[in-house]
Image 1 (tube, rainbow, N blue to C red):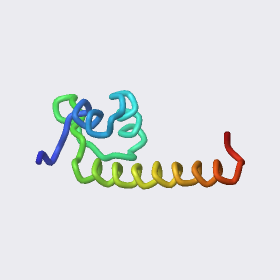
Image 2 (spheres, rainbow, N blue to C red; image 1 turned 180 degrees about the vertical axis):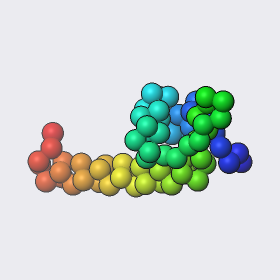
Image 3 (cartoon, rainbow, N blue to C red; image 1 turned 30 degrees about the horizontal axis):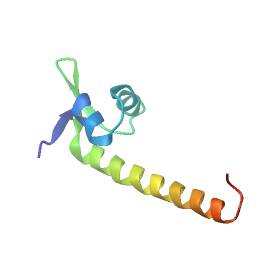
Image 4 (cartoon, helix red, strand yellow; image 1 turned 180 degrees about the horizontal axis):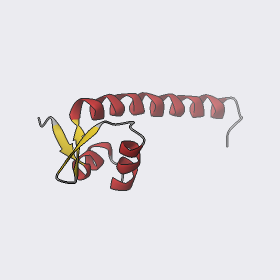
Length: 74
């Protein structure tokens, strides 16, 4: 597996737009380095973000399910 990915590769991996990934890079949420004007996303940082993002998404799904069961969410 590559240790660095292009923004396009990272976007496909995360199932996000390249623009969203660019924002995450701008915010330094995911680490990268520049090489000849190209952003190369660090694999370890990307995998860490993906894991945390997945956990948060699963938690929100669970909260929504509980809310629906309690009749608080239509």
